[in-house]
Image 1 (cartoon, rainbow, N blue to C red):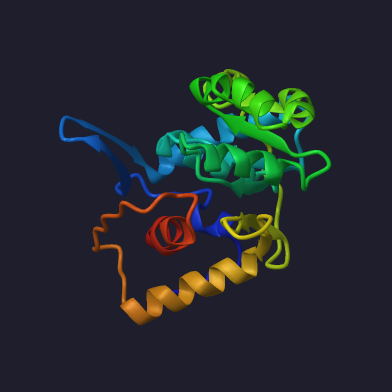
Image 2: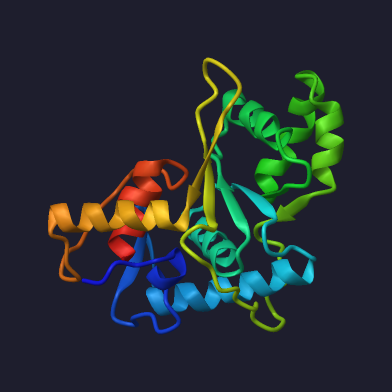
Length: 227
């Protein structure tokens, strides 16, 4: 198989209709989306982001618990050369604290999250001394279910292997969270090595319970199997 040069080539402009991702929320609640539909939805989200003035090189922190929404926004960023910053959107105080600590490391990052998650941040921010950051963060919010995707699809931006694919942050459990900048070349080389060593093919079916904010969930599972 050829080596991908950027993640845009992984979800190409001619994605397969006969391959899909299945989201299992419970025994009686499963949803599926084809690779082709994922790209179509990602372009719709990209259009919404671009209409908000978000463009090449801007950072978008993904604090999104719904896996389907997460992937739509993640790929919207990739296709538009926007830099996604995945964070685990848990309900615990450590997850919320990490969000504020990561947001403080950017000058102009946007934060995408669900409305129900955002509702819980107000009281937490005041009680934990993040009031000033919360005021700034509120001006940079992108409700994941509130983006206007009814307009024109987004415009893709051509990338090189040296461009930033996404930024992954450490847990921050022992110090301030540290961001690791991953280029498209980094990630595609990693995917290529995994695929070759494991001899994966398009006949394989994979099951994962790892969060997409984790490198094993995002790179080792989603991106690798999509490739």
